[in-house]
Image (cartoon, rainbow, N blue to C red; front, top):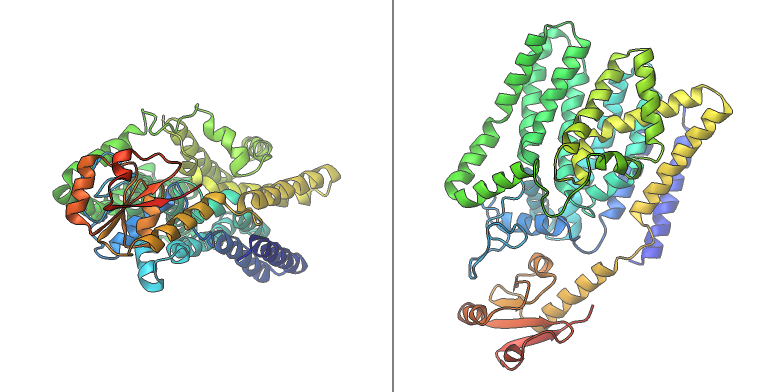
Amino acid sequence: MNPVFKGAALIAISIFLLWIAYNNNKKPVQVFWVILILGFTFRFFVSLDPFLHDWDERYHALVAKNLMDDMFRPLLHKSVVFNYDFKDWTNNYIWLHKPPLSLWFMATSMELFGVNELALRLPSIIVSTLSIALTYKIAINLYPEIKMIGLMAMFFQSINGFVIEISGGRIPTDHVDTLLLFWIELGVWIAVRQPSNRRSLNKIFLIVIVTTFAVLTKWLVGLFIPFLLFCFEYTFKNKSIYINLGQFFIAGVLSIIIPTLWAVYLIFNYPIEFSWEQSLNTRHFYEVIEEHSGEWWYYLDRARIHWNECIYVIFILFIYKLFINTNKSDIFLFIWIVVPYTLFSAFATKMNGYVLISSPAIFILIGKFIVEGWAKNKKTWRMLVGFVLFLSLRYCIERVKPFYQNPNGIDQSEAINKVKSVIPNRSSSIVFNNPYYIETMFYTNIVSRRGIPTNSEINTAKKNFTNISIMNEGDNLPEWILSDTTIQVINVTR
């Protein structure tokens, strides 16, 4: 589809939905559904990218495709014909770089709707949209007297470019962190619903289930859910700290039972790969992995890009008000924001998606600022409110890129189509020196490898494959390969 037409349609739909919301501002239910549809529209649009994104989506996509054959055998390459380095998560065999749950979601979706980009991203579209609704539910439980805070919070989440891009697979940690955010929000919503004491066991039971899913999505980060339950119970309820610590401990222990069974399964079946990946996870704290470095203020600096350039002013005013007039909901919101920022700022490895779990609290904070600022009925405050809204909308368009056509996506599609037109689309075919080796294996049945092969690898290929080809980009192939008539050369340009 023409990107100009798609972009124009997106903007027209968005303006129409915003107009409906504005004209129904005194009807919270109608505004709720309009904002939810708006958020879904942005997420669906971004998910229409007709190619796989470099980091990390293409790897998640291929592993999820291979899981369709065996849900308990996470593979990147389906066969071990060539030697591989189990330490290289971008080109190994058994792929344990992420826990299985998000990959199972993607595999199930593709089992139902076919192996394609939209089916791959459908679970993220759904849970990211549901997360918007959960933000509203959390906000109205924390601030029941002002429902507009919840509506504004979900509005900012619905249009946030960072959240939209990560749900569409455009930026690293993509669908994994999108699903994790959903579990975090679902757990917080269960925690803040404030049931009577006789239902406290039900709350713990539900928290255990949700935390189990979160741990299966991103290991120990999922334990942030029972931690937030502890913080909420300690802040709002007149219970002993020891009782709250006991709840946290019990919920945490019960939540890791099933993930531990999964880990034991991996240890018995893939001990070397599992041991390496767990050591890699640990090293993130004290070692810069894959050049993802940054100073301790990295996430504070990125906050202006992730959320809004005015976030610093909003947060400072929030802290000032917290000291002047202590509010239990404000304290909980403060903990939800500060703990992940403090924890991940201490890590040597820095990645944008790490602080995504704080995003609902930040959106509620911004929504609270908007509502309270507008209520002051002063020109300066209303101008500041308008400026915050403008910056958020500008950032949304900047990240969604409604009229942009990614040249890398065009190159990817053209290269894969060229491969399919030259060699048979079956597992007995192999193509070497393929910059889109992961994407090729996702869209086809052809085995694909990156880099120029050695003589030994060519001989191995001749014993195991009936059709051998190699991509030639810029005449970079050695003469001995070009002179081998059994190897079909595919000339490509980028």
